[in-house]
Every structure is written in C-alpha cells, then in structure tokens.
Amino acid sequence: MMSQQLGINTYSYIWSMRAADCVRHLAGMGFRHFELMINPPHLSLDENPAARRELQAVMDETGAKATALNMPSLDHNLASPVARVREASIAMFNDAIDLAADLGSKWLVVVPGRMNPLFPPPKAERLKWIADSVAALVPRAEARGVGLAVENVPFSSFPDAKSLGDFVRGFKSPTVGACYDAANAHFIGESPGQGIAMLADVLRVMHVSDTHRDVWRHDRVGLGSVPFSEVAQALNAINFDGACTMEIIDADADDAIRQSYHALTKLGFTEQGSVE
Image (cartoon, rainbow, N blue to C red):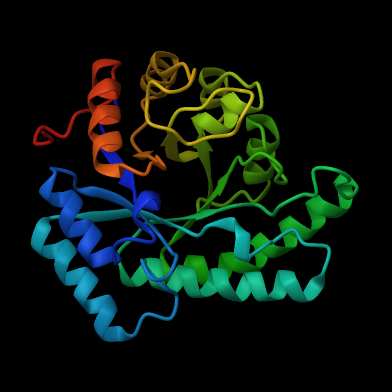
C-alpha cells in the first residue's frame, strides 16, 4: 500500500476561501496534506509577509503540510511562441518557487505550456520553448529546495506519459520530476496504470479525479470512468511514496471530497485515519 496518505488539492475553494481558512477547514475534516492553488483571493503570489506567516501558523497549528503548490494555467504559458509571454511566465514561476519554499512545499506543479489545439506549432519549436523555460527555472528551484513537477495536461506540450517522461529525464536532475494526472491521462485515451509504470523512476506527484473520455472533467469519484483500482495497483507496484492528491472540482466540494476519499480508500489508496 502507498505510504503517502491521500491529500487535497484546494481548487474547489479558490473563489470561496483564503488558503489559511481553507487549510483550517479541511484539517477539521481530518485532512493534513494539501496541494495549494495559487489563485487570488485564495492564495496570491503577492501575499505580504504577514499573510504568509498566518498561513504557515495555521499549518503548524493543525499539523498540515503543503505537499505541492500549483498555478492554474490560464495566466501563463511557458511554451508560448511569444518570447515576452515566456519571460513573464518564468518570472511568475520564480515567484511561485519562492512561495513554495516559504511554505515548506517540496514541489511546484508545472503545466508545460498550452498548445493551440486547432493548429499547434511544430514539435521541435515547442519543445525548445518549454525546455528553455523550465531550464531557466531550475537554478532558483535548486537554490530554494523546491522541485518542479511537470504535469501531463491535454493540449499541452506533454499530454502523455511517454513524452512527459522523456522530457523530464532529459534534465538528468532530481529537481525536475513528473506530476501525473489520472483523469488527464484517461481523457486522452491513455491507460493510467501503464502511464504510471512508464514514469516509475520520475513520478513525484500524483493527481486523482474522475472524468469520461468525451468531456474533460475533474469530477468526484464515481461520476466518470477512470479505472481507480488500476491506478492504485500501479502506484503500489512502483512503491510510490510521493504526494497523492485528489484534484476535484465540484460546487459541493466538501461532500465531493468526502465521497471520493471513502471510495478511493476502498480501492487501495492509503487512509488518513481521521477523516469522517
């Protein structure tokens, strides 16, 4: 069984709760591991030192841990064909690295650029843009002790496990790892279990939520067709001990998280022991 307990991505709360209030709320439900979304008013790159200290104080008080930080990809693009957009995105990610370090997070999830699904740029060019952008982040990440977990995202530079693994291994650095999202993989027609096996040596962060293959979703477990037993078995087979996080977007977030947690633990994911 996986040694890492199921954690919570705070996506469902980005418009309704500040991160400090959200951590306290979810800790009250029994959770202790969090992937915090950088999205104001929830959590901002421009948080003043007092706000960061407040969040850290809440985490210390509740015994919570930030396993990763994550930024929605609509406001940045590390693989943009426009140089000034890449430069602005690198600056945002450098600030995010600092925020992650201040909060004691080991990983920052990196969406590897968005591609135009109608007419994407040539493969060689987009690979150079994203490789140069991530390479520019490595020095700050190494200096601050934060890893970069590059994620498989539909319509991005690396939507599948093979291309993601090849890219991450190309850096030959423990600072650059992979974040694998089971719903994203399932949506593009990839077997999440096979993808996990392919990424065994570089997998650092795992995302779980549900979706069908006709519409891309991050639903509560049971609303889609993601083969979660296969995911659990694959993670156990590689002795995965990284961050395993429920990234669920739902209007009734508390109920969706509770329902998904209990469904996943019945399928082999690690329990926390205090979640009602």
